[in-house]
Length: 370
Image 1: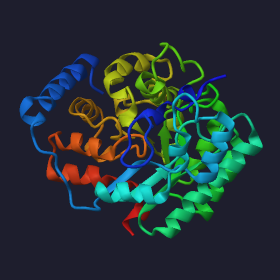
Image 2 (image 1 turned 135 degrees about the vertical axis):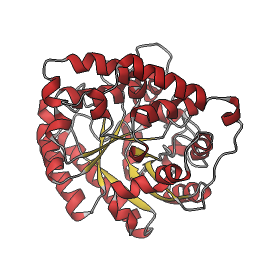
Image 3 (image 1 turned 90 degrees about the vertical axis):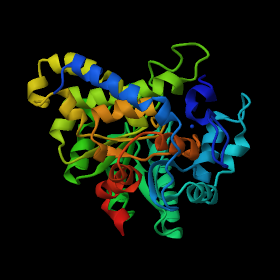
């Protein structure tokens, strides 16, 4: 049986007062430019620069997790996550008030909430549909209770396609969710798999925002014994998800979807030059990526959670336009203050910082302007 550490690797990072767990260019030219940018970003002068602190209540956090009590209770009963030195009480004691306290402490005006791994799918169609509804209704209640403070990337019970289509309808039409939140893979299948096509066709029809969070792939939960999967496997599962969407033509076939990937796209910024040379040589590349791999990667959006260091931001900024980079905290599994401090050491213009903190998210999610 897979233990809790393997099923919930993201929950072993420290948190701000809540739970305490661990939650078109050629390749050579691309890498040369990346190295130069990274060197400048990591220079001693920048490393000693004071962190920039925008006015309180300014940021929009697009990577913010909820732990609804009923969902967590069932997860506790199913996985017995109190074992192995992990405190179940810390997980079960989470509350919206803790979330709001962290937001207020870190100048976060609004958080768009989403689920984290393992999501709601345990091989049971009925349970997946029920847990999706429980999670989404709870989040919608908090949005009503705290006007202006929360948005929602609603969960759906993939790989159950029919159930996902029904929950998309409910979440977007009834709950007025800001988008749909998915995991990077389900039962070993990545999002470009043909079986998921009806879901993306519907999301494309609705011009939806689709947010991806990594999980532990069926292939790779314990590749290196004793190493938590979030150290290596999370970033690479996000990269596999992006690659799957590209090579199967899912991005090309669904041009109305706005795609958002957590953790700065995982390993993608560092792999982009290699992907341009290898993925770009596939037989169908000219059809589904007519302007090249790098042009497709620049269409996607990325959040800064666990990608806020000067080196990570240098790589991300070489790959993506600043208008497509969004602030993310990864609350409650990572300290929001740490990411904010790191971002303060990355040189950018005042307009770029305003966009990262708030403006880019408002352009992507118009409801947040209200």
